[in-house]
Image (cartoon, rainbow, N blue to C red; front, side, top):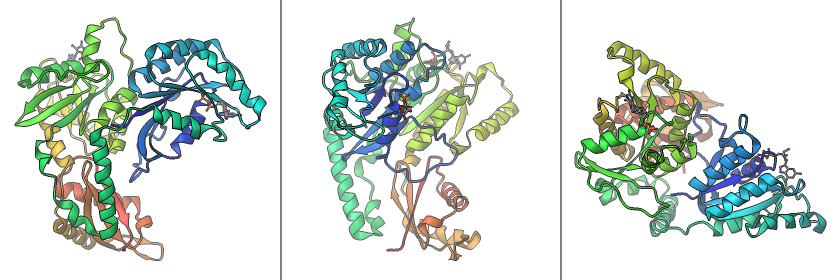
Amino acid sequence: MKPLVAIVGRPNVGKSTLFNRLARRRIALVEDQPGVTRDRHYWDVDYDGRDITIIDTGGFVPGEKDSLLQQVREQAQLAVEECDAIIFVTDARVGLTSADQDVAHYLRQSGKPVVVAANKLDSESGTLQALAGEFFRLGLGEVFPISAEHGLGVGTMMETVMGKLPPLSPEELAAREQAAKAEEAAEAGETGAEGEETPPAEEEDRPIRVAIIGRPNVGKSTLVNALLKEKRVVASEIPGTTRDPIDSELTYKDRKVILTDTAGIRRKKTIAHRVEKFSVVAALKSMERSDVAVLLMDATEPAVDQDAKLAGIAEEKGRALVIVVNKWDLISTDKRKQELFREDLKHALKFVHYAPIVFTSALTGSKVEKVLELAVELAVQFRYRAPTPQLNRLLEHMSDNHPAPIVGRGPLRLYYMAQVGTAPPTFAITCNRPDGVPDMYKRYITNQLRGTFDLRVPIRLLFRDRP
Ligand code: GDP
Ligand code: GDP
C-alpha cells in the first residue's frame, strides 16, 4: 500500500504550488481517460524510487463556508486520520500566525510525523533564510526553509519526509524485486509476452478485497451488516492495532472475500455524535487496497458530484467497479422505471460505462447477495489472462471489419497484440504509429476486447513500436 503524504496549511501559504511541484514526478497513467475529472488534489508519484500518494488537503477541504481556522483544522484532521506523514506549510514572509499555532498544537498531539516548511524563501541569502527560525516555536521540530515556487530546499525537506515514512514491508520489497525482474525480462525479450502468461499458482486462493465506498448515509454500514449476517463469517474481525483498519472476512461460493475499511463504518455507530465527513481520501485509501470497489449511491439522490468523483477515482486507479443503487425500496418496484434509471445513470457516469449496476435495498436485503456475486465475478475478470492466439485472431478480425484509419501520411497498421498485465487487464499492441492512434479507434479496440472476453472491468491499452 502506498504511503500517503498530506500537505496542510492556511490558504495562500503555497500548498498547491508545492503540490504541483511534487506532482511533476507523477507516475504516468497508461492512458488518460477522457471524462474523468482533471481537477486533481492527489497524485501518485515516484519519489526516489518509492511510490507515494501526495495530497493537497486544501483542495479536499475548500474553505468557502467555514471560517479560516475551522477549514485548516479540518485539513489537519483529514491528514492526521488518513496519512502517514504531514508537510505543514507556513508563509515565512507573513510570519507565525495564531492559526498556524492552533494547527501545530493539534498536530503535536496526534503523534504523526510532521515536517514544517517555511515557504516563500526565494533566495539563499542568510537574512531571508533566518525568517524560518521563528517557526521552531511551533514545537514540531526541524523547520525547512523552502521556495515552493523556485524549488529551493524542497529536495532536502522531502528527504526527511521520506525518512519518516513506514518502512517497506517484506511483501512490498518482494513485489519490487519481482517487478524489476519482469522489466528486465521484458527488455531482453521485447515481445516476450508469452513468458508472462503462466499465472502464479496461488492466484486462485487469493482473497478478494472489496472496498465499500460512498457518501455518508447511502447505506454502507447497513449493506455490510446485511452481507455479514447472510454469509457465515469466518473471522468476524481480524484484530488490528489501533492504526490498522479492521476488515471483515466472509466466504462466498468458496472464495474468501475481505470487505476493506469497514472500520470507519462501524466506528461511526459507536460514536453517535460524530458527524462523518465525506472523505474522498478515505475512499481512495481503501480502493488502493482492493480489487473491487463497490460504490453505493442513494436512489433518492443519485449520481451527484461526489458519486461521480468516486467512480472517477476507481477508473483512474484501474479498479473493478460495481455500482449499487441502494434504498431502491423507496423508489419503485416497477421494472421499467429501473431501466430508465439505469440509462440515466449510465449516461451520467459514461466514463465507467462498463461497470454493472445493481438496485438494492440493504434494509430489506433485496439484491444484496447480487452485490457479492458481481464483486466475485469482476475480481476474476480483473485478473483474467487472454490467450495470445485469440488476441491475434481478434486483431485480424478488427482489421478486416473496421480497418484502422489513415494516420498522417499512411494507414495505421496493427501487427500484434499481447496481454502484458492484469489487475486491470493491460494489452500491448505493436503498430507502425504508436503515438498516432486516434481515441475513437482505441475505444473501438477496447470495446472489442470487452465483448470478446466479457470484461466488465477497466482495460488499459499500450501501443508500441515494432522492435
Ligand atoms: P495555497 O492556497 O496554500 O494552495 O497557496 P498557493 O499555492 O495557491 O499560493 C498562494 C500564492 O503564493 C500564489 O500567488 C503563489 O504564486 C505564491 N507562492 C507560492 N509559493 C511561493 C514561493 O515559494 N515564493 C513566492 N514568492 N511566492 C509563492
Ligand atoms: P452509511 O453512512 O453509508 O454507512 O449509511 P447507513 O448504513 O448508516 O444508513 C443510513 C440510513 O439509511 C440509516 O437510517 C439506514 O437505516 C438507512 N438505509 C440504509 N439502507 C437502506 C435501504 O436500502 N432502504 C432504506 N429505506 N433505508 C436504508
